[in-house]
Length: 488
Image 1 (cartoon, rainbow, N blue to C red):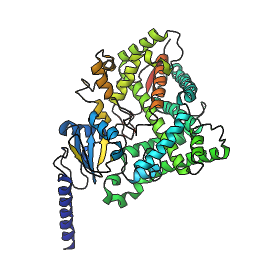
Image 2 (cartoon, rainbow, N blue to C red):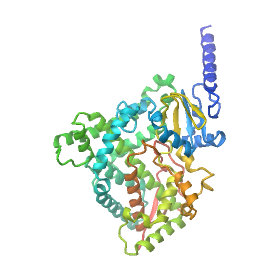
Image 3 (cartoon, helix red, strand yellow):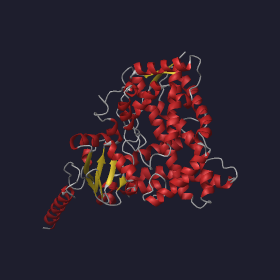
Image 4 (cartoon, one colour):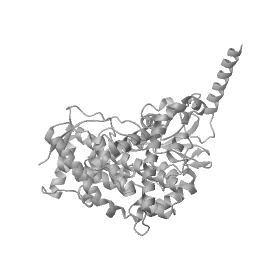
């Protein structure tokens, strides 16, 4: 009898949850799919949620509602409505969702990326942005970027001599990690250090684990009732976060002991001075933000550039011929100042960013109050997800969007070009746009330009390289080998 009662009660609860999830909240709700009890629409996400959500947008429109587990969510794939939410109504959508995965990473929402209310975010952003500007970004980092790029090219040269396959992932990550570490901590992975152990391994492995978990989340972030049963599944993520926090805390203590308030050597020094040494937790977690966001996203863009140019040799050669034509055959290094002279190369990078937005779903927001946006009602507490992958794959703006075609960015029709550029938002939009946007653009252009200047690259196997991404808070291709030939 007791078992029958429990079974009957379970059926009733599932039915009530189904009804709750599928009742309209107003006459102005966006359209959306039927949501199942408990899981909502989690089954629609697939292994690459940005693709699963785009499939739903193809059926229900560029703004649609769904339930991600317990959470009522609205997914936005429309560029104009993203602007309405993230720019014009920013203060109402500044907050982040509260879940254990985000809380663990951010030190209870004390960092820049996950601060989950407007006043906390504004204070942290103001402190970081002011000091970030003081570091005089371009002048401070450019020489170091040039050194790192030359080191990368010298290392790649070895593969042209040996004929061994070149695996770009860790090589590019080392460049990005060093640039972020130099800017924030005055640290680096030395040229003679292996990419497979030491400081590189200590940093890169936890970063990859954390990025994957932050993007996909844990199931109990979505379905709260199962949280007690998944306690041990978080251990790997917790361990990776703890490793990175301990690493940055060691650096913080070194900075505190060696601090010269008259001559701050890096961004961490400036933040310690600005906080009068009273915000260790916040500064450590902001350092984690920079290290994870800056290194993983920039290296990912370089990976996609190498992959797409290997798979599309005709565009690779056109971009190289432009470099030779504009810069001359004796050019030894391409600087960021050369960017306006190389529109074809810029078009190739733009096309990579369009097809594989490095952070396709970003970090979700939460509506603070009820609001109506472009005729759609968004109730208080709704989670907002913008799908930058879907924006870049909009067939109304990009003809044949699944084709890699850099020349779409070279149209002479300025109205069409303006509309396409308006849909290229790899770093999101609004006040909460990625603070490292300019640095990432600088780094990716300089590295991509100079590897193309020095090498012809192609698939090592002779077969097209798999371009289906591995999902996380940033996306990367599966690790792949490249054949390098030194250009003469």
